[in-house]
Image 1 (spheres, rainbow, N blue to C red):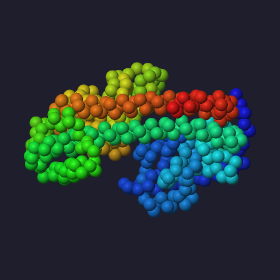
Image 2: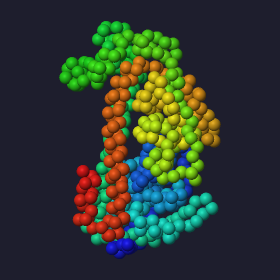
Image 3: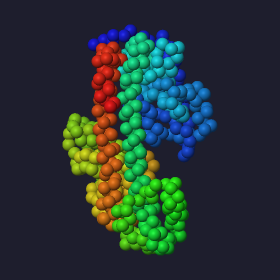
Image 4: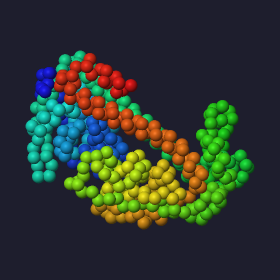
Length: 444
């Protein structure tokens, strides 16, 4: 079905094209993000997707020509040509190669509507029309993009359409941020119990037992928190009584692991869990299905069969090292990964955060394609906690992860509703009153 609205070229709508610098700045360890195609994720910029970092000096140079502003759209000219991402408010970054900025000016097209219009089917029709086949990548020419036509509804309709679609997107983003917070809460809990030994320190302070010198700084923090509670400046010590009652009030020295709670053991990672190489699965043999495929960087599609029962934990073996993924359901870990085959003195929740505490990149070998040897990682020193403590930690972590999963499922539903409504609203095929109830239910 064709568009109800007039299709107008971008140049007539006052959309300005700003090309990137056709060179790449030097990477630094700490700096400003340099956003490229890998950081463009479903219409948004994923600043967590390991962008190159550049110096402040290079940032100034690379933004003299193309300085991304709130409301701009970033469009890729290569790879998945036409892929776009919206520049959020307050973002600071430089534009990578093969990307252009599209900036609505002149007032005919609202930036929020433009954000959604270039994700619609009309935009992708224009991409197909102007795409130039290449030996390695297909590409778009900067001279052709201003010729792209998009539907131009009346300004009032633009605002309604963008308002509805943005409401769904904002709900998805809110859930995503909430999940980050929930996971951070579980990670803080893990660190407090199994790294900083807060419950044992509290027990030692209550019993008047000596605190090892290496733990004195943490003990002083606990004393200050106790004083704040006593003076009404804080409400809780943040430590459930049930966990404190399970833990000792003394420490013992173990050599390589230093001071640990008395009765716990100093061991290695393979005392906690066993890592196993993932399974081969050529793309030609993949079938549609409900089971996630997990690669070194995370989910990489689905398949009609699985190899491992969930919940499980996966990390990168080759390519992307250091990313640790928690997988709820049955899944297929690909051959670029290591997955936890057995949990001895651990669990999926404990093992997930234990692996995140290890600098896995230090165990990678090979310069061209870094590879993680599981036998080397198995030798990493670790503390073995009693099962009673692990069980209580799992109880708290599982409650947080249930909320994460609920938000994930909600986001999947919201994304399906948004993707269904977007082309119909942009084309005018579906009117706002008809879509209003569907959107209201989706964002409620």
